[in-house]
Amino acid sequence: MLNPDIRTSPEELNQLLADEFFEFGSSGNVWLKKDCISEGGLSVREMTLHDFDIQPLASDVVLATYRVVDETREQQTLRSSIWKFIDERWQMVFHQGTVINQ
Image 1 (cartoon, rainbow, N blue to C red):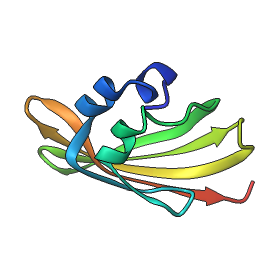
Image 2: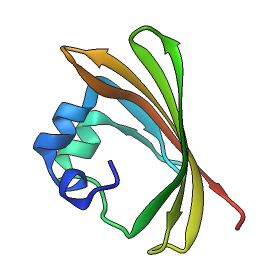
Image 3: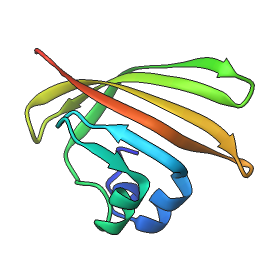
Image 4: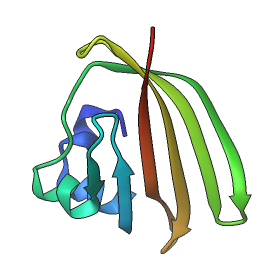
């Protein structure tokens, strides 16, 4: 999801985001799947991912947690995403980003 080619592709996002997807963004905004796709994708920034971990919640659901350093906005965030195995592929159903002090 940090790859610019995926972030700017409504087709790729449509495959990765579940129909019921919603996000509590680090901006404080709430986003739905339709918001991510209709806007022509997500913003592109220079970001690196650290401390990635996955915790199973059920046989078809996992919680992914990680830290993102956003060089473009000069901020760090803690991220959590819930992924569910739907229609023979993993799809994100929830995401949250929380800005942290550096």
